[in-house]
Image (tube, rainbow, N blue to C red):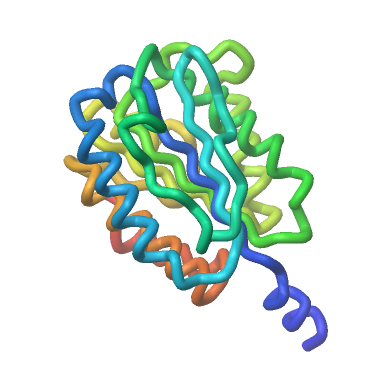
Length: 199
């Protein structure tokens, strides 16, 4: 019982990895509006939110804030460019979050419309192993692949929870559902994601 109470008391932390590569330019405005809708769905929950944006020019942690204080994206703060170092973005994000391992419940949400083509530090095998290791330690990963190029990438990564969708709006809807399940019941409750949304 004491262990269960300790687990319930852990702060919840969503780390959102957002593709900001050139291929997202065609859906830039939609991504901004869909992210706004996503935030509206989770604003009432208590926890921490980290946003990481990535392209081949950068893997950038934009902020780590209480969820209630997370700002919306704008045309000035979301500027798609360059190519897709997806593996580097995932690997660097995981390594940065390790400081909170054991102290927080961690949900990593990945949104991309592209296939890996520019990573220099991590390859597919390394990311698969890293995700598997962290899942055994209670982390939850949700991969949202928007469009055909991203669909195959989700299955390659080996994570339990992934969805392939045609639109960013659908992806954000699935992401908000998984996030709300995470807040309601912790990491294990997000397993609903696989059976309901995997395609």
